[in-house]
Length: 466
Image 1: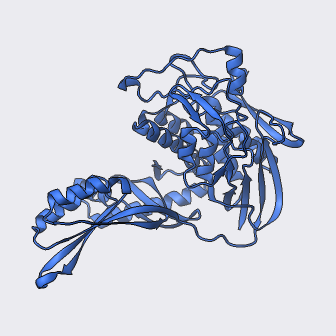
Image 2: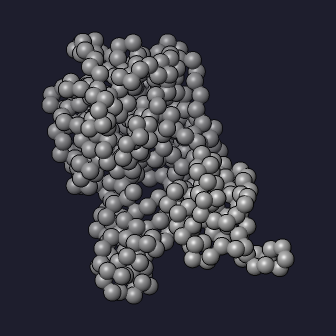
Image 3: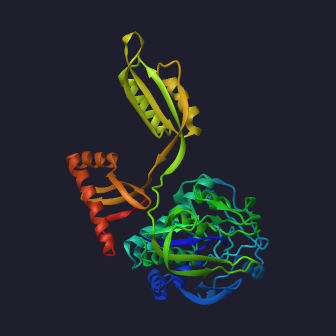
């Protein structure tokens, strides 16, 4: 298996990754043609630089005749005053982080919501963009279907992180920095370049996140920034002590999407390597990432996500069966991960049902109260258990009667199974008076057709990913 190993000993950002891709052998014209295909009025400047004695490739984005600047240089030049964002709910999605001059970041791209109230940030080359507009820009670009989905997934990861932090729907998030032209270029070129590497898997090292603090409109936060922490869940991180933000949210989103696993340097037969440079220099720390390409000499151990879930149980022997169905629906509506009943023989030989609910630990209290309120049980048992699960994602496919979601499970980046969403198929079958099995079969065929078309560079049967 051919792999690429990404070493983030000095952090990770979009421009550093692009530089490493080119230095490791991706032809510059591949990224340049990608920028042209986006049609956003940008171009790339590719140069050789030296960072603490290491020769590396530097990629800069030019828009409207201006070169993108590190934020410290921009704020020092423009001396833009910081204005607090609106606090009312109408503008609740505009969470404007300002990482200013006191922040020694080595990377170019900023955390995702840089736009100040009414004042463009250093990477805002136009109006703020929502996720819908960004998806449309990417989908219209003349790049492969796989690269389009990868780029959209990176943006969706950024949006989901920001939406969770600020407790708003993801579609209300307006991408200020990541919606800017230079960041669209970074992310789409990262997706195209990763595909052009021709590797089966990208593996990543633990990430050096840096240290210190970052000043935002909401206050002063420690590095890594909140969005970066959210994006790097389950990834191994550390700090070398450098007082700087080394991993940007855009870099974290790229790693989260592209890396299939995190480990120390894997067993491999090295073919080639490349260095991508950041914008700044640190004493004693080369501000670069290294990308090493080669053939793995041992197969990776299968990895699965691990989390703690709470199991709630109650024995029911005198509950109306009609009520039991209602209780199951209520539990799932209130956030249960799963709920099911198993027939049991209880004391005095009475037939009963064992109700079992799986939920997040933080939801256990309210679901316990629901069980007491809606059933006849006098007690609910509770225990925490470790659950291993495959990585899961959704894709939409088009059928003759409408769109159907396909749930896709994978292990180590390899798809293990897929299935159409039952509720979507049931709704379509009822609306169009079509046999349910026919709708489900058409959804599966559309998904398989989508996979075949992706290899050919397009995906007409796919309506996008979630």
